[in-house]
Length: 175
Image (cartoon, one colour):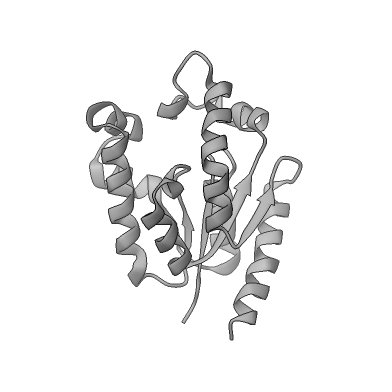
């Protein structure tokens, strides 16, 4: 059975881009949980947050994760807050090899400042929000991931290569 590679990490760490790169290299289909939620709900994530609240959005994420148990041989790029629930962290590890993409708050701010589609950062001090959220989420990412990769000073190709090598080792040691 082919294994999944799951990408977790804060918004702006490159999960979607790295997911596309890995999909091309491995020939595995890409599942981007945020994109699927937008398709299923028929509206962008900020609208879901505004009309239903963050908790409802997290329920949608959890339900989607449960539906992914039937998939193998996929690259799964997740939303940044998906690790907030213990149930989700457990499912992510069951689904396959979990890679945490890490970036400094200043780098995250730089990468996300061009995108208004980030409901948690639409406030007067997004960098402070990033720091606060990272303080909460970092231990959860750490608990969930098999591997963490700091992406600040690496190209997307370098990150992709690192994940490929570590995934091959991980999957090979399980046989």
